[in-house]
Length: 370
Ligand SMILES: N[C@@H](CCC(=O)N[C@@H](CS)C(=O)NCC(=O)O)C(=O)O
Image (tube, rainbow, N blue to C red; front, side, top):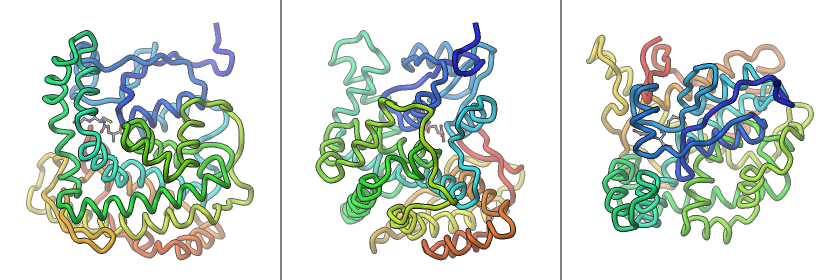
């Protein structure tokens, strides 16, 4: 029987409540009212489904009853959006489309720093237990803590690898995150979603870190509710989806002025890192001809809130940047003129001037040359 809303395949989402990118995809599936069931990615599910279908251990993974397997939250949303019809989560007009791509890049590839910092430096034991529960749902709490501590190991290191390494930098991460919360709180006190009364890929991108880590992890959730109750309400709106398939983006390709401080922060914090990452990748390619590009290619210095630190260089982030640049480059005529003026208003010169590495395609959790 056809689905009441779409003649749609039925989907299975393999993921977890504590996973960043599962949250992003789940919020999309829920708002879009797609028929799906969610299966917890236990150790058994990794072995029986994810590894055989994907080839490496990752969530989220979406499969359909037509035999497809989709991996990577950005590609999953793109693929489903292209086939499902219904109200679009990617705006049709230039500046809003650009803002959505930028905020998805920001949520996916930059807010991972505070997300990992708060999870592993403020919610550590809770998170270890949660990893254990997920991996072995039927084991005792002690067994779960033991297995969780083991499984969470690589994730627990991520906060440091991504930059939140020294006490001074951890304080900088917290200053930046708390200021972001204040900016988002002001925005969501005026508008239910990033670009209007309908969620977009901007919201789903931001929801990744702001749901699983910063809202659900107990100490982080308490901080969010205290400092930014309107952000917590936006999380709850996306979590419970009281009005799926409703609403619209602001008319006239407008971006609410309350969103601009968030984008200015992104331009200030993330753009220099992406520009420098592009130079690193070019140098790496020159010295490793024909080699597969790994997930991290060394490390580089970066600055946050006036503090200087060190973080790994992740080529994958440059693929997300390329997507945002593709939106910009596709704009012509008056849309390009408006986009340039808008980028100038958010300090986006580095985005306009960005010189990427050779064209990239996504390859699992890294990239390859196109
Ligand atoms: N960029 C991917 C990344 C997926 C991802 O990083 N998933 C995490 C959990 S939220 C994971 O399973 N990582 C495994 C790993 O990093 O090896 C996406 O958008 O889905």
